Image 1 (cartoon, rainbow, N blue to C red):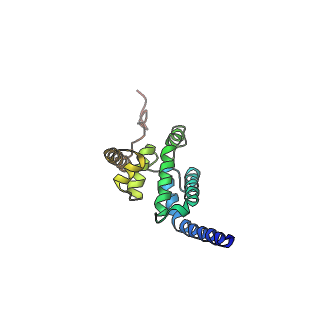
Image 2: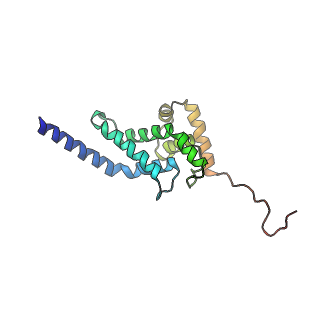
Length: 165
């Protein structure tokens, strides 16, 4: 009995390690996009991924044919959405991430990353976030517009080389 349990645990660990070896890079990239951190300095993204992987490992035997990548991605999305106030707080406190996604709201970022980077369907994103598909469509359109045409900074008080009036 113990030998069978030990064998199952070893097999489970090998399966999970193989999954992580193949998927962790892409999942970390998605989490980094969500947190709008730099790729070389992404502690919040790493924490999001670590917690999502731990949750998936704990339920590994219950997946029963489900795609573990989808499970981890969903867990990352849910945890990010539930902690969105935290990400916003950091953003407004001057800890803003870089890149074109740094100026998007957490919800816009989540929709854009899931739809564009991860290729998740509109209906699935709506179900994940508990939003109507029309709202997901609007968030996606706004996020795309902001990503393609980021807002400019404030205008300078005076033009260089001119005297104040």
